[in-house]
Every structure is written in structure tokens, then in C-alpha cells.
Image (cartoon, helix red, strand yellow):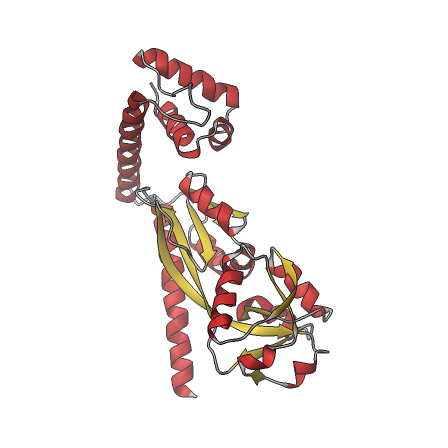
Length: 307
């Protein structure tokens, strides 16, 4: 029995889906079923309880899953250690990220990383936050990048940056004459926000609720680029990460206003599946994220102290 067979089985158990296990391993759903039957024949035991409507392992299947998972972890660890001993930095990194991080935070990191390690291939996939957690848990990606990380079973959270939220408005908006306002001044204005199931929306609502500010949300979208386009044509205002509107502010398409009486921050984090071994290339990329973020914080501190 090959390691590939063990991985397919573990992916099947993790996802509880033949189609997802097939997609993760680049094979057909029929091939997954055939491998499962071959495994049952090899061990002369039923692995899946077919009397249940939902996916459920038999007692023997549970034991096999635990053993196979341990074997794969040992193999991954050994492979990673050998690569580090040889000082080899190559391979693939698969990242799942929300749009705002992928479009506005990630490019600078990727540019520096690829310049230093051109033999590493990095694949970036843009997803909604809830799907990123699924991708990480199922092992479909090496790491995820999310905002306002949530405690999730089986997920390791590694903070790497914080973004200041500012008010984005059209230059034609009545508030455009201000450079900063109190949060209470937002009352009564039309607000454009993220969909309610997106962590940034939920967290912003909670922060404003704690300041006794109730916003009148008139439009909701699932990505930051659509929100910016709606603000540009003066359909409403939006609280957005400062970095994400830099280009539009420079071009005069948007104006940013600071919230002076309440600091609104958006934490960003790397999420990883607990227990999953990180190959050298991934370790180096995660280290770059952390170190560059630390450098940015230190630089900001120096600038503030010199003002």
C-alpha cells in the first residue's frame, strides 16, 4: 500500500466527501471509491459504516485513520527535516486568502519572497473567510490568510499584522471637508458594508455597538473592491482598512477620514491546520510575513517618536 493511498483515505475522512477527496488528490470520485474497496479487501474489514446515511467510519476504520494519519505526519516531518539538512528551498506553497489581504497586503511579501527564492512556486486562491477555514482543515491549502481570526477546533492562529480602519467617502460627500471625525458623527449617513457573515462586518458592528453608534447599512457586498466602487459614486460611506484605499485616495477617487475618538483596528492572521508539518519553503514564507510586519510596526514607532 502506497503513501498516496493513505493520504486519499485521510482526506476522505477529513472532508467526509468522496468528491472533495478526489479533487484534493487530482483523481476521479470513482478512483476514490475503488481505493476504499481495495483497502477494505486488503485489511479484510469494513472501513465505512454503510448502514448510516451520513459518512461514518466503523471502529476498525477509526483505528486505521489514526494510524494512517500518524504515518503521514512522520513521513512529512522526515521529508521536511531532510530538505532543511540539504538547505533546499523549493517546492510549492498554496495559499487561500480573503480578497483584501490578497490584493493589498500579500503582493509586497510575494515580490520579496520570489526574488529571494525563485525556485518556489506560490499559488494564491481568493476565497470567502468561511471557505478558507474549510480549505485549511481539509488540507487543501498550506495556509490561510484571514482578518479577525476566529477560534476554530483544529486550527492554529498566528497573528501577523494589524490594519487601521478609516472612513472611506466620495470627495462629493458632505463629510469630505473633514480630515477626522468622532464616531458619533456617522449617525444618519448611508453605510456600505460587507455581508453580515463576513468577520470584518461582524467585528466592526460590535466595535461600533460598544460605542453606542448604530449605522444605517444600505448596501452589502462580499468583497472590498465592490464596496469601494459603490463609495466612489457616492452611494454611501464605508469603514475600510487604510491600506486598501491608498491608490484611490492618491487618484482623488476617494477621501479618507480618521476616527479620532475610537481606534478601529483589524487584526490579520495566518491560519494553519494543527499538527501539519511545515516544509522549509512554507516556514520561510511565514517567517517573512512575521518579520516584515514587525519591521513595519517598528518603523511606525520610530516615525511617531520623531514627530
